Length: 428
Image (cartoon, rainbow, N blue to C red; front, side, top):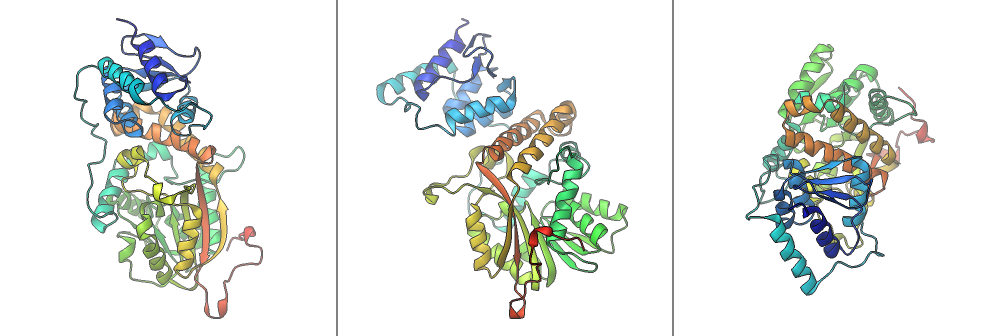
């Protein structure tokens, strides 16, 4: 038979209560859907089995990572169309069908999907995790899953800067220049000067530590839970002759005991802390700063839910990208920093900058696809392509934000040490 795609499209539209915005090509080469639209390709029946076994994001992710499901055409356009149908469903759309009609459509889909049970999840999926989140052991395992996939792979995606966080773009600028400008912006906000002690929490591959020591003369301690990152960062430190100024540790931030520091940078790390641990995180950083010291907390934020108890972690992100990662609304972050004793002095949104950064990373990945597969696995490369492209749309459509929050541990008498016009951020 060569009618799988029309049958699949009709059944999907019945269940969703809306026309499919993308074209479908099925395993029998049949097609259905709007001409000229991006094509959602079901390369094998098992893609449909995965979707029926785990409806929603996790089933889609498993089919994508396994290579059973792919997209032909503009990836961003396809994800935008699917997002509008499934994840950002307008109220104007008809409600999905219920009752007997739904059961009949599901029965027909089960017949179309072929023999059960569904295949095992792809190897790239994080193992099932039980027990208490954000213990030291569990955080190490989560960081290992995401970051210890090979430094060469990250070099390919991130470029020479090896900075894995939102860049700070100027019109017409390059990714490398935008990442340099972001690091320099952080240093200027922290008012780093010769000899200042900086703690870089979640130091990654050492880029912030190197920039602060090289350009500002700071004495930097960088901590990470990733051994691969630490080895890479130490090599860079040695090659630049900065071993007398930069120390890289494999250490949990909760175990840092050698304060006080003049400044703390936390860039793209707090997303791993977890809401239940955030006040502890803020309190530890506050205690590690000297009076008058500054914290720069650079963190992704989500929009608040009408009922925060209904918030659920993204299944795809949790299973394939950041196990146990959690995003908090900006207001929650600011509130927790204040409860820990910080005075929040400046908040700057870089939301549009992250969309540009992610698109640059996707372009680098796609341009060197075969090498990315060789350095990791086909499934891992597909995880990254989907994750970064979908995240770019999340920032561009304002579902996600990213903010730099500058906070101060007040000095005796209330002095902050900040200029009256903070946005000038003069260099030391």
